[in-house]
Length: 48
Image 1 (cartoon, one colour):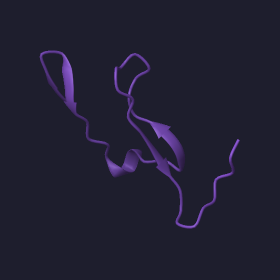
Image 2 (cartoon, helix red, strand yellow; image 1 turned 45 degrees about the horizontal axis):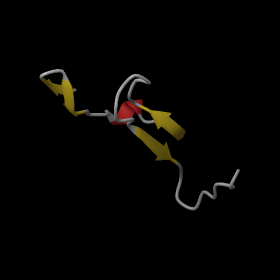
Image 3 (spheres, rainbow, N blue to C red; image 1 turned 30 degrees about the vertical axis):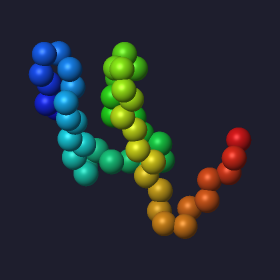
Image 4 (spheres, rainbow, N blue to C red; image 1 turned 60 degrees about the vertical axis):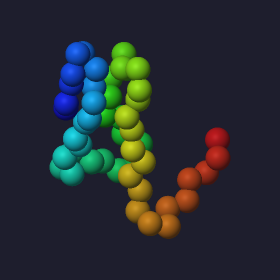
Protein backbone atom coordinates (compact mmCIF):
# COMPACT_ATOMS: atom_id res chain seq x y z
CA UNK A 1 0.00 0.00 0.00
CA UNK A 2 1.33 3.44 -0.91
CA UNK A 3 0.49 6.17 1.61
CA UNK A 4 1.41 9.86 1.59
CA UNK A 5 0.41 12.30 4.33
CA UNK A 6 -1.93 9.65 5.76
CA UNK A 7 -3.81 9.21 2.47
CA UNK A 8 -3.85 5.85 0.64
CA UNK A 9 -2.61 6.47 -2.91
CA UNK A 10 -2.49 2.90 -4.19
CA UNK A 11 -3.23 -0.62 -3.02
CA UNK A 12 -1.80 -3.78 -4.59
CA UNK A 13 -3.87 -6.96 -4.21
CA UNK A 14 -1.69 -10.04 -4.90
CA UNK A 15 -3.41 -12.72 -7.00
CA UNK A 16 -3.06 -15.24 -4.16
CA UNK A 17 -5.42 -13.02 -2.11
CA UNK A 18 -8.16 -13.09 -4.77
CA UNK A 19 -11.26 -15.08 -3.78
CA UNK A 20 -14.41 -16.26 -5.49
CA UNK A 21 -17.43 -14.06 -4.87
CA UNK A 22 -17.46 -10.54 -3.48
CA UNK A 23 -14.34 -9.53 -1.55
CA UNK A 24 -13.40 -6.25 0.10
CA UNK A 25 -9.75 -5.33 0.50
CA UNK A 26 -10.21 -2.06 2.41
CA UNK A 27 -11.20 -1.49 5.97
CA UNK A 28 -14.70 -0.36 6.99
CA UNK A 29 -13.19 2.88 8.30
CA UNK A 30 -11.56 3.87 4.98
CA UNK A 31 -13.11 6.68 2.94
CA UNK A 32 -13.10 4.73 -0.34
CA UNK A 33 -14.00 1.05 -0.30
CA UNK A 34 -11.96 -1.30 -2.49
CA UNK A 35 -13.71 -4.50 -3.52
CA UNK A 36 -13.88 -6.97 -6.38
CA UNK A 37 -16.35 -9.42 -7.82
CA UNK A 38 -14.58 -12.69 -8.65
CA UNK A 39 -16.74 -15.06 -10.68
CA UNK A 40 -16.17 -17.38 -13.62
CA UNK A 41 -17.19 -16.18 -17.08
CA UNK A 42 -20.88 -16.81 -17.69
CA UNK A 43 -21.88 -16.73 -14.01
CA UNK A 44 -25.34 -15.18 -13.59
CA UNK A 45 -26.14 -13.26 -10.43
CA UNK A 46 -29.77 -13.09 -9.39
CA UNK A 47 -31.25 -9.72 -8.40
CA UNK A 48 -32.20 -9.54 -4.74
